[in-house]
Image (cartoon, rainbow, N blue to C red; front, side):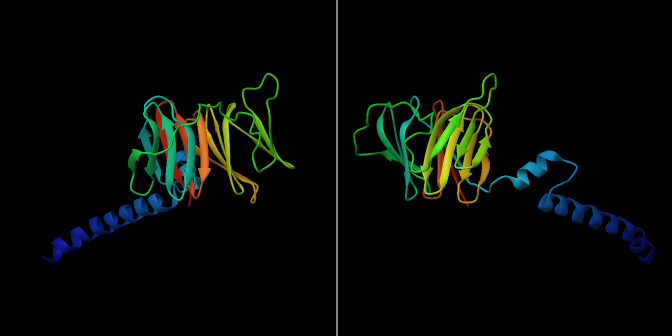
Length: 194
């Protein structure tokens, strides 16, 4: 019996070391793996995805309710329960996305450098280079949501920082009460901002 325990002891030590290393790598990221580093530095969000009939427009996010219009008319989604239901309001005429980021409560300008595929957004003395061309903008307080063909970006004007929310881009965006939502074709996505 004593010989069996002594033989198993090195195996148990080896297993405990392997398990503790994998737990540590899962909790802290692996410095040799860039994708783990990106995931650790990404904003902590809860991502939701919904299908719409045709492209959604007239996006609005208030008090955990995301409302929009599509071929079915007005719709609303409770972002906490994910319940999608008809909205008892008429839909406005489909407007153009705000690609110039104009008419917002924050003074924003979009620059499109010649021969460059990416726009630059200027807010006061701060400049934020983007991936792709601006398709739409939305503001809530000091948060500016921007969707390009290549990314969904959230700029915190008060902190002077930006975060990539989604690397796929889209068509329209709205920011409101702790959420950012965007469309990409007939897909409507939302992320809770912690």
